[in-house]
Image (tube, rainbow, N blue to C red; front, side):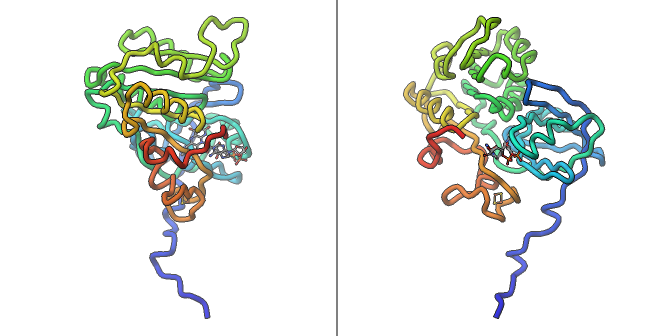
Length: 285
Ligand SMILES: Cc1cc2nc3c(=O)[nH]c(=O)nc-3n(C[C@H](O)[C@H](O)[C@H](O)COP(=O)(O)OP(=O)(O)OC[C@H]3O[C@@H](n4cnc5c(N)ncnc54)[C@H](O)[C@@H]3O)c2cc1C
Ligand code: FES
């Protein structure tokens, strides 16, 4: 005898239906990373919270989770910054102006923007991890007076892997945000720092007991940064990380992104560090 399938255990088909979008601009950030501006075919804005992601579908190839890297104040353009690492992301990286894509979402928890009000904010990013925290920086800088000291510490493998270079320069010249950048390996033209992201932490101003930190990058990097912040007195409940696992449905249905008792697509991807520290990987992805 077969067990009857109840309505509640069925995935509503519309939940998996992508909305048609079109690429309206394409920018090569680095040799393997592009930023795409997308516009909905129906003209309707896709409002989102910094930290949320969408499922981006390339017709005939597949669908992957990608964080929104654009300005939450300009939801009429959906911005994604994608590093080509496999079949789908390579297909995304070759998309050009006018090409169609499908979008589901936005999904997931956002960075704790309410908790940052009146606080010092330390944003720490590694590699492609700068993309998911860019909306946080744009939101903080758009309303700068509502926050205390704001800083970004950012590390990449080499100088040619640095994302959003023009924007980093522009932020630096504002004088109301501290921008510190380091690379793992310098090249002959590089005059900046070489070393791990945590080596930049002593340079930035923050009062530990009044600080919220937003951390995104490889899990090993997030663990090291969180440990350093905690050793300086930032409460682990005030440190937030964004986690990645393979996803299929993105709506808490299929179990692909199971993370202990939670699903990363539904309960994350942003979590308070203290909630997930014991479950995070200790090696780089
Ligand atoms: C919530 C969330 C937000 C994300 N945001 C971004 C983003 O803003 N920009 C971006 O470039 N990527 C982002 N990713 C990662 C992106 O989804 C993966 O790179 C993509 O799914 C890989 O698919 P693929 O078919 O191109 O490669 P695959 O053929 O699936 O894999 C190629 C290689 O990448 C590894 N890989 C696969 N999935 C992941 C993953 N989730 N994390 C790390 N390594 C993986 C595989 O182990 C393999 O080595 C995000 C992932 C999640 C879960
Ligand atoms: S991707 Fe299906 S439960 Fe998270």
